[in-house]
Figure 1 (cartoon, rainbow, N blue to C red):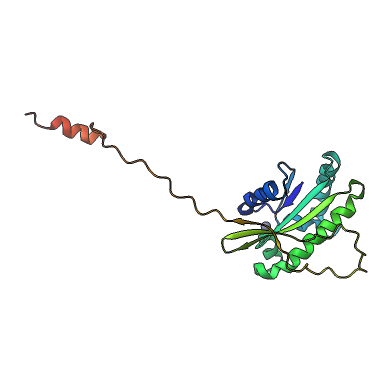
Figure 2: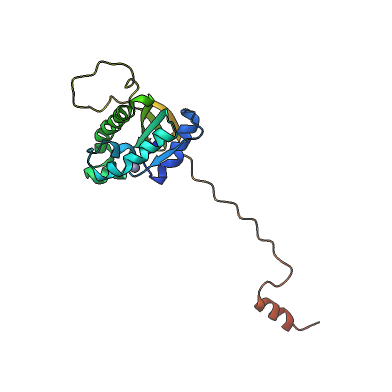
Length: 195
Ligand SMILES: [Zn+2]
């Protein structure tokens, strides 16, 4: 399953990344504003309470074994929540996305889920995807409740050049019809004095 932000400007790139870089040809999608952000809400938060059963259903009945979380640069959800510019939102975004991956592993221990977290980044005319938690599943000693800090600047997993704007569709040259094309033309032709 891939869980990402529903922002339509990014979805094509998410698909391309999943198909060609992560090699997941088909997958369940879980898309909502802010993507994985909702997973880190308080356990009693109404949104989490409403969505958790949907998640349970997918994990249980679709027997998921891999979940990919994608957060993206300049996410409107974060900008609205934090009232901050895209770059200023990043630390919270990265921390929450990594935390969301941890939570999913905790919630479904018997499924031995592989959960991966990625940041989709945009610079100029390029999109790049960065793995956020490459060692999260390794049996690293659990730090004693250290406050989660944003991971170090991740290296891109895949870089997708933004598609240039499609060239304008060539309009076929107008062929001048030998026949009048408008009622007025017909009228003029009929009224022409015959030689
Ligand atoms: Zn978004």
